[in-house]
Length: 83
Image 1: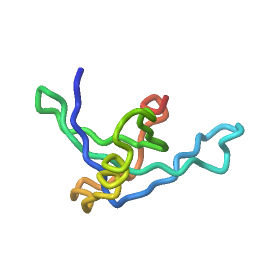
Image 2: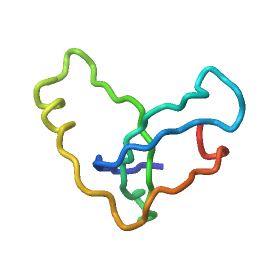
Image 3: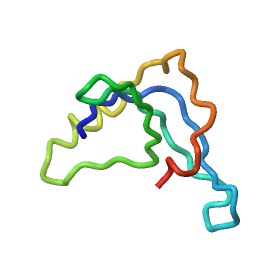
Image 4: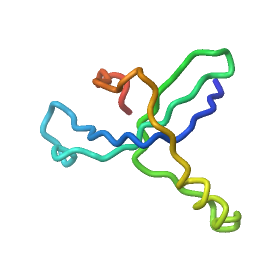
Protein backbone atom coordinates (compact mmCIF):
# COMPACT_ATOMS: atom_id res chain seq x y z
CA UNK A 1 0.00 0.00 0.00
CA UNK A 2 1.13 3.55 -0.70
CA UNK A 3 -0.28 6.63 0.97
CA UNK A 4 0.22 10.34 0.50
CA UNK A 5 -0.29 12.38 3.67
CA UNK A 6 -0.24 16.05 4.68
CA UNK A 7 0.44 17.51 8.10
CA UNK A 8 -2.41 19.19 9.98
CA UNK A 9 -2.40 21.59 12.92
CA UNK A 10 -4.14 19.02 15.17
CA UNK A 11 -2.18 17.39 18.02
CA UNK A 12 -3.62 14.46 19.98
CA UNK A 13 -2.39 12.50 22.97
CA UNK A 14 -2.22 8.73 22.56
CA UNK A 15 -2.32 6.74 25.77
CA UNK A 16 -3.03 3.03 26.13
CA UNK A 17 -5.70 1.80 28.50
CA UNK A 18 -3.18 -0.43 30.27
CA UNK A 19 -0.41 0.58 32.64
CA UNK A 20 2.87 1.02 30.80
CA UNK A 21 5.80 3.37 30.43
CA UNK A 22 3.60 5.43 28.07
CA UNK A 23 0.76 5.86 30.60
CA UNK A 24 1.11 9.64 30.46
CA UNK A 25 0.52 9.59 26.71
CA UNK A 26 2.47 10.38 23.58
CA UNK A 27 1.82 13.58 21.66
CA UNK A 28 1.14 12.90 17.97
CA UNK A 29 0.37 15.20 15.07
CA UNK A 30 -2.56 14.17 12.90
CA UNK A 31 -1.67 13.75 9.24
CA UNK A 32 -4.43 13.23 6.67
CA UNK A 33 -4.25 11.76 3.23
CA UNK A 34 -5.25 9.07 0.82
CA UNK A 35 -4.10 5.67 -0.34
CA UNK A 36 -3.13 5.16 -3.97
CA UNK A 37 -6.58 3.59 -4.44
CA UNK A 38 -8.52 6.54 -3.01
CA UNK A 39 -9.21 5.51 0.61
CA UNK A 40 -9.02 8.51 2.97
CA UNK A 41 -6.75 7.96 5.98
CA UNK A 42 -5.63 9.70 9.14
CA UNK A 43 -2.23 8.95 10.67
CA UNK A 44 -0.95 9.78 14.14
CA UNK A 45 2.73 10.65 13.80
CA UNK A 46 4.77 11.17 16.99
CA UNK A 47 8.12 11.80 15.26
CA UNK A 48 9.51 12.24 11.78
CA UNK A 49 13.08 12.59 10.55
CA UNK A 50 15.15 12.68 7.39
CA UNK A 51 18.58 11.24 6.69
CA UNK A 52 21.42 13.66 7.42
CA UNK A 53 22.67 13.62 3.80
CA UNK A 54 19.36 15.09 2.55
CA UNK A 55 18.48 18.78 2.14
CA UNK A 56 17.43 19.29 5.78
CA UNK A 57 16.71 23.02 5.33
CA UNK A 58 14.08 22.19 2.74
CA UNK A 59 12.75 19.32 4.85
CA UNK A 60 12.39 21.50 7.95
CA UNK A 61 10.70 24.28 5.96
CA UNK A 62 8.21 21.85 4.48
CA UNK A 63 7.62 20.29 7.89
CA UNK A 64 6.35 23.67 9.13
CA UNK A 65 3.61 23.66 6.46
CA UNK A 66 0.37 22.54 8.09
CA UNK A 67 -3.29 22.85 7.19
CA UNK A 68 -6.43 22.79 9.28
CA UNK A 69 -7.75 19.26 9.83
CA UNK A 70 -10.75 18.13 7.79
CA UNK A 71 -14.19 18.04 9.30
CA UNK A 72 -13.66 14.33 10.04
CA UNK A 73 -12.49 14.97 13.59
CA UNK A 74 -10.12 12.52 15.26
CA UNK A 75 -12.04 11.36 18.31
CA UNK A 76 -10.73 7.87 18.97
CA UNK A 77 -8.57 5.24 17.37
CA UNK A 78 -9.14 1.63 18.44
CA UNK A 79 -6.06 0.26 20.21
CA UNK A 80 -5.79 -2.44 17.49
CA UNK A 81 -4.94 0.40 15.08
CA UNK A 82 -2.05 1.66 17.22
CA UNK A 83 1.26 -0.11 16.73
